[in-house]
Image: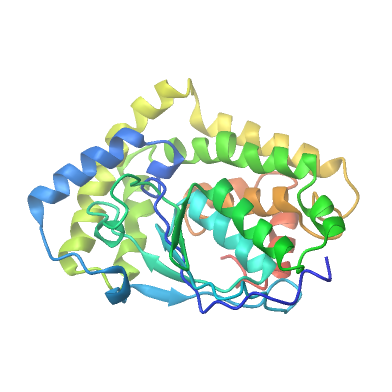
Amino acid sequence: MQALHRLLRASGRVAVSQRHVLGAVGGAGLCVSTVAIHRQMAAGAIPSCSAMTASTTAATAGADGNIRHLEGEDITVYQYKICPFCNKLKVVMDFLGIPYSVTEVNPLTKKEIKFSEDYRKVPIVRMGGELFKDSPVIIDELIARLRESKVMSDEEHAVFCSSDAKKWAEWADKQLAVLLFPNLTRNFSESYQAFSYVNDVDTFSMMDKVSNQVIGSAAMWAAQGKIKKKYNIDDEREALFSAIKDWTDALGEVDGPFFGGDRPNLGDLCVFGCIRAIEGLDTHKDVLARQGVGAWYQSMVSTLDYAPSA
């Protein structure tokens, strides 16, 4: 995957809008209800995309230290910090060295993505003058552009996006991510903990922070039973641990520290991104304590040059 390290010019932005952080894990109805609640509390001017300042610049060097610029494309990601789909996307971009900037979206008002009237989930990506929705679609588009730019060879693509890698990337979306919501909202305390990140968002007003922390936490906790019923989940912790075992069993069948062998592939990155979304929370600690997870996770952290997890 050495050749993957040359092009991609973007001082970047990506528009993320895939379900409310935890809603991205499966709380479709919750997104509607929490927005309705908050709209009764606050109404404010909605800044245009170009006027938004709620963005931070992400790391621009890939896993090999190189930056890949997509010719003429600025990429902006609008995200919820603990959304597994948003984190999965960012991990892939970080690994490939695709520069982007991030704008944190208010989970209740979603005013930062008002420009996307027909699609109110995360992630959405703004690349140049186009909008892309749904994390797998966005990732496919980015990889296609890398290949068109001759930054990723056919051989590299075949390894990075092998059929097995794609299978686990899809598993991360449809199995792992779905189990995160009910595990983060087992009680009000854990739901409150999950929303604590809003207090560190500089662009959120005090009202934004309080309403998200209190109302958002309560709404998510209240929706937990509905989500479990929708996905036929009995014991959410056991279901999560069982899913994690499926992944570690797969890791045990390959040579090397990653599912991709000596280098992470798309499957590694998508699973890691989902788990990293809940870093710092009780559920994250419990997941890393499972046999076979910790060593792989820390190898991913090192490869991506992320700060060590607490």
